[in-house]
Image (cartoon, rainbow, N blue to C red; front, top):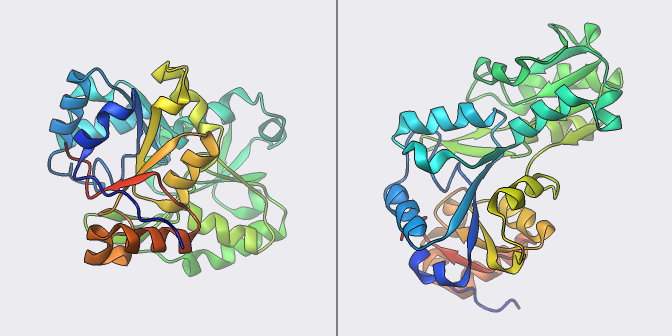
Length: 290
């Protein structure tokens, strides 16, 4: 049986233990539409305490677009300087083609995803096509519309897998909560593509490579002094373990309904739930507040 998790009231209880933090965005900083209460104050207090932070997002958009989006929510620009995203990693991988896997993709690309992710392709020498039969590879940034189901894409995914088209998944998340509503992400489509026999390359958490950019921005040699803050066991907590750093789970995020009131108050209940999921954080906080 897992030892009870320490549930701290806020970041003030753990700030002195670490020099830097890797902060998830969706579920920690905002809900896709609105900043959570106390977030700006918490970031301000971390900065005044001399703590560094980088924001790491599985959003399938480039870092400047994410910064602009948070600015519209009311996030001060000073807190958006250090952003690493799976979308930025996807853009660079498609543009530079230094990785042999990406170099072999070809040029004709089918994009599965909403219009808001189109900036991912700006400045990249590829031909966008509209049908699986015309494509050499697929870039998956998520469903075209909120509320869509994986089953809505079954025929397209089956056709792509049948043709042996490699898929780039620019967001490994299975689902997020946008404005209180649970919606699927690119990771859910990619998982089904793999089940159908398709090949997928994931960029983002929980994969180790996405953390290298975070460590470079933080500039902290001792990674034992870095902790990741996130609300997803599968991506944030597992990713922190893969990167060799501690993790602090935000209870009220993606798994809030599953943990329930008991999990938020009882470290033993929360530890049991995390152990069952196979991803154990170092500690937990109810929300990203000071």
